[in-house]
Amino acid sequence: MGNPEGFKTPSAINVGSASVALQPGSLLSDKVIVTSVNVEGPEITFETDLKNVNLKKILANVEEATGGSEKEPSPPKETEAKAGKKLQVDDFLITGGKIHVSVPVLNQSAIVKLPEIHLQDLGKGSDGITPAELSKRVLQVVVEKAEQEAATVLADMAKGGKFMTGNLGSTTNAVDKVTKGLGGLLNKKP
Image 1 (cartoon, rainbow, N blue to C red):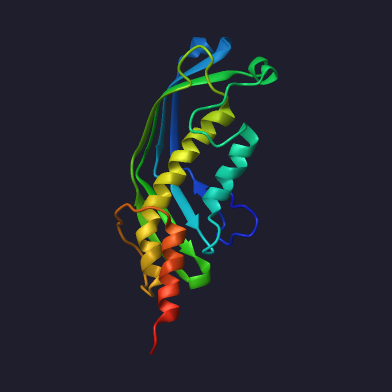
Image 2 (cartoon, helix red, strand yellow):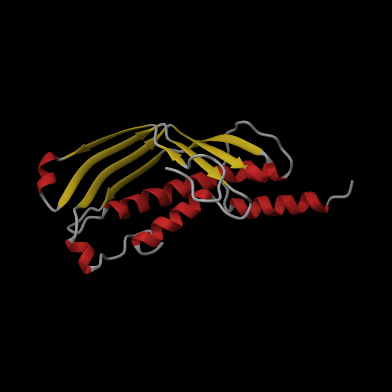
């Protein structure tokens, strides 16, 4: 998946390898039952210019296209409910991922581990979910985890640390931490 306009890195998400298992008979019904999706070794690029984050921009675009930012899918509009197949994904697993943290304005980058992401029972029930809703739900979790893992290294970058790789603990609001760190650097007297 490419980056939105204005970001410098060539891509936001590279899948690695993926496998999908489904109930073949469900292909002929209104709801396709996917028993498992396994994504191994994705590479996520978390790029920020200290104001915007590429993954959040992508998520905002997906949320706009699917009708909102809530974690639960919104009830489908009547025309959406009649159009196209719905999905049920019993098990969605992402393992072995890496996050490439990139801050071009600081000329800094680092690589951190993406924690395992395991989602279950997506679209369970009679309604199911659309492929766009599935994408939104998965992307919401990927963005949340990437932001958590990138936060500490971003704060350290703002304080002048040089990084090539590392393993980080979880904190929140990476952009605020980077901005505060830069403010502290600018206020120091030589």
